[in-house]
Length: 184
Image (cartoon, rainbow, N blue to C red; front, top):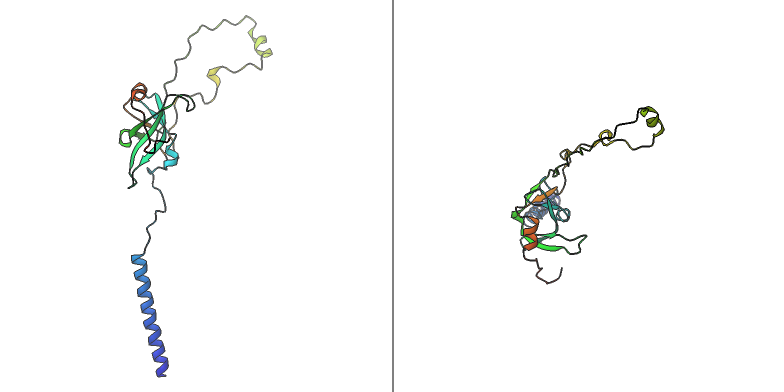
């Protein structure tokens, strides 16, 4: 009986020491993880390629790279300006804080409708209309021809675009961006 009591006491002591050691390990060796991104936190991989607009709502380039420091702070955006399909493009570094981000698409102004005179149809226009059934419908009958872009209702992991106070000409005149390694 005495041996059983000692065994139980030893088991209880070992259990208490084990859970105490376990608790210390969890407290001191605990890892911190981020399990979800919040709305307004963006994926850097999706930020590359986002259009940058000038103060006149004209596209001036796209984000081509993101520069961060050792602490994880975004220091600059590299914006590709000008060129065609990357040929003749100039890279300009902008402080991240200079860009105002928006989740709403830019609504480009729509051109004014043409005011050209329409020819007067012939007197027998019903026979012409019936024989020309493959003619394209007029622009006024096309569905979805609205110039207003509806706001995004889906949450994305990146903004729609950024806006800076500089024009395309000012960015073209800015100094080129160079990486520390000298490589692009």
